[in-house]
Length: 197
Image 1 (cartoon, one colour):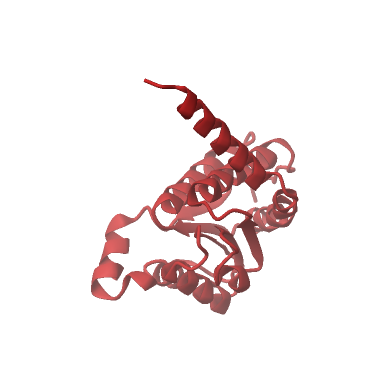
Image 2 (cartoon, rainbow, N blue to C red):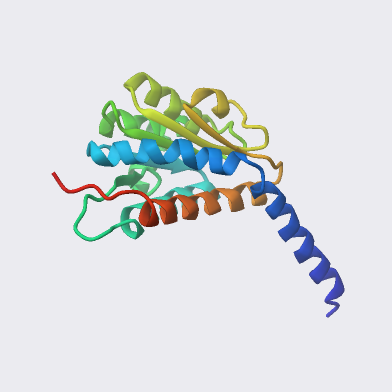
């Protein structure tokens, strides 16, 4: 097997991914998201995460990491839920109503003002992510959107848009996972713990 072509491809891929995570948007995003998450934790609010396809797995990954890996001693935990994980509920809404409402309807049932909605869409134009963010805004939730490819409509619908400067879905998703781990590490290592109350 010829390896020169593979090695060149790998180097190019890594360089393109690095270019997508170098700009200043990343520290600015962390600086805006951390206070929202910490306020939600202090007030006992819930963080809701959702996305489609690879972004659905990123939403689940976020919940695992923020819910478990940020725990310090006996201090208050983050309340968080991935709306993609209740497959029967997702399929019921998709079958009986429309796939565009699978996350919005769950927010309508579960969320209260002061909660946080985190929508993940590589293009920023997924109809069910947009519908969920519109519902979240109507309900008084803080809204965060992780996207790329210029941001799409999601960029204008959220309080904190995080737009990866890339038109490659793979590099956008790489950056979203990096942000997941970066936020988790910061919240674990640097953010002050909150006593249960």
